[in-house]
Structures are given as C-alpha cells and as structure tokens.
Image (cartoon, rainbow, N blue to C red; front, side):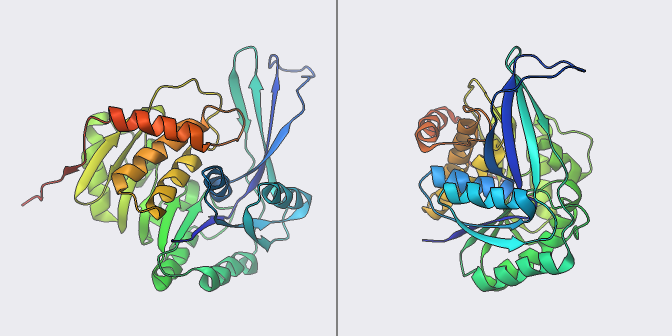
Length: 322
C-alpha cells in the first residue's frame, strides 16, 4: 500500500478554551485550555490516525512550543520527522463564547525559517519519498520563505514518481500553480484568487474549474464549498458532492480532515468520486467536535452513507470543445 507523508512548514500548537461572554476591558475567566498539535499537514496526519491509517508527519519545530508540539504528536502515536529550526513554533488561540456559541480564532504568523533549515526539508524528501507515495503538503508557508517552495517540492515528487497533494493559501498560492500537482483542494476564495476573479457564482463554478485545469498542471481539482460540500473535476469528468447539514461546534481542521479522507480512500483503491465523498464526510465529521479534535471514523462512515445516498448528480463526461 502507498505511504502517506505529510509536510507542515508552519506548524502550530492550537490552544482551545471557552468563556461565558466576551467583552472588552475586563478580565475574562476562561476554562482550562486543551492543546492540540496543529498546522495543515499535522492535522492531516492526526485525522488519518483517527481513521486507523498510519502516516509519516514531517514538520519544522523550534523553541519551547516546538518541544510541546513534538510531545503532543508523540501522545497521538504518530510517526514524526522533525526538522529543527532556531525560531520558535507558534501558538494559536481559539475561544468559544458559551453565551452565543460563537468561536473567536486568534492566529499568529509563525517564525522566520532560515535557508539552510528549509533546504533540509528538501534533502529529507529526496531521501524519504518513494514511487507512488502520497506527499500531502498542507498549510501556509512561514514568513519570508520563498513563495515557490512547493514548486521546488514538486520537482522532487516528479523525480521520485510520487503524488503531490497540495492545500495551501496566502502568498504561496499563486506561485504554487507552477507545480506539477496530483490533487489540489482550494476553497472558493482561493479559487477566485487563482483565477483573478472577484467572486464565483454557482453557475460559473464548473466552467471555471475546467478552465483552471487547462491552465495548470493538476490532475484532480477539488473545490471545497464548506457546508455545501465540494466539486471535483478532472479534464474529462466533473461532479458535485453535497454535504449533510449538521450542528457545527468547530470548523478548525475541517479542510484538513477532508484531505485526509480523500487520500485515505485513494490509498485503499477507491475511485475519485468515492474518495471525494469520503473526504466531504470526514470534513463534515470534524465540525461535530469542539476545538481541533478533527474527524473520527465512526462519524465519517455514517456521513459517507448519507452522502452516497444523496448524491444525485453522477460524474459526467465533459465534451471536448471543437
């Protein structure tokens, strides 16, 4: 079976707490916080672990918070490859107001990563990756890193005949479109940025998805639509996958859970349509729990059954334009 390696260049320790009412200029007595290892690729590895699948989690780590991060990942019994850095790993804070059930998320940018530190990541990928492995590169890059870093990563996946799954945003998003990508998962906002349009309506989504696949080197495009599900497309097929309506407790890590569900399914020989359905199920399952607990297999399997029974539009062939 293919291995899955996740790569997180800007990991984080997520601190989650709650308070009864958020008001200014007053001490707010919060509940004891829960801590989670976070950042795109790390969340994917944690979600895969919840689904019963092992992965290798590669990430940068520095300072006391970096040590805390390593311990959190060890507590999850996830295999890890740590690239030490001089800068300190960041910590984010999410606070739920129990009076309103609204969640407030405070995100910091992360440390400066030196050239020799990010170069070490590329060296390790050369050593670790093998043919047909999945490399899930997920999350933003740290400040001042080369914005074409994921393009450099794709040169290694090409050389090793591995599959690059990319889920990034921020300054690296547009430069990363020059990479050779197996599967990419932008949301609507990110897709708008890539295509240089202000917004995308429901009627525009399919033709724009097809247009993007003609412009970049990407085999599978999966557009995350949040609570509405997802649309996946290749150059020859396209399909909309609905998501069930649930009572959301937190959306943190939902996209990462979705990626985990898709790659998990693909490693088990499922079709693209089945993989995206399971990805939507896992993304929805993640919202059922507070903080960054991500999806679990029991919820994901139940939601997948609902999606399977309620997907009306089957994958359709796209006619070639003359």
